Length: 326
Image 1 (cartoon, helix red, strand yellow):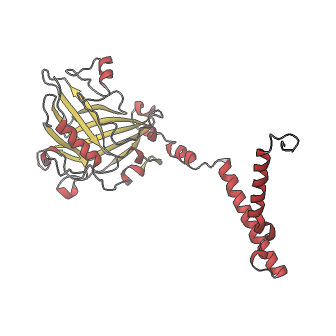
Image 2: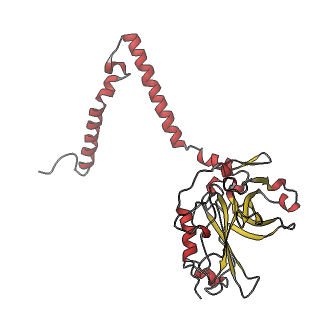
Image 3: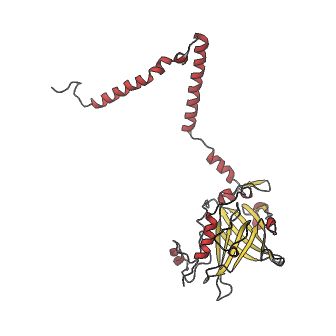
């Protein structure tokens, strides 16, 4: 069986390519417990998928699209019922593997105050300051995203939220916008990996092991008030020293750069001071203002003469005693 995902893939691909409004403060100015995190390099739509086999024979593909910096765009060419409303930051799709179209499209988090929904209300927490013992051993940031509801706009809809843990992982530096858009059954270069790990066309893998975004769960809270999506995002930008390392790597000038700057400033100082001295002491004008003005004025001719001597020496190096054969 070959899964046809053309329609669903087209929806998410257009979401990746569409122009996005700027909400960079959502990801570049995150402060938790007096520690600042800058996640703007993770911006752009990213996706993570998970195969659910808990209710055989049905097999369901859950795909979640997230942009930590911007709203996901509403694409005009796609039916509105097959995409999340304007203002969405995290959108969920679920469908049967043998179906082209999503069965449900769930706005999990976003800024919906202008559309009769809830606010995004981001809550950031430093993992090292977490209440549980397991958090104390982690380095990174936990962010809660709110505002979603399904069915959207219904008073009886189930409230949604997402909890994303950005975990410090210095081996994860991928910041591409579209490289994480993979779906089970798509034609790509991962077929060999599927064979190695037991996945094939009829039984795709349950998740993408190479994706730094990991699906943890999507289930109701114990009190039943929320349906919560939990994701882990492994990235170097969740390390507490990430901004210091970025500044040190981008702000370091090499020896050659400093040499050029010092040489330029020294030359400029010499010329300016020398010109001022010649003007005040001798009343010089024009070329005579410059220190060693005659030498500077003759420099093109000196260089021309020097180059001729070099060429003459190189061409005449093979003659015997400087005499030409008769």
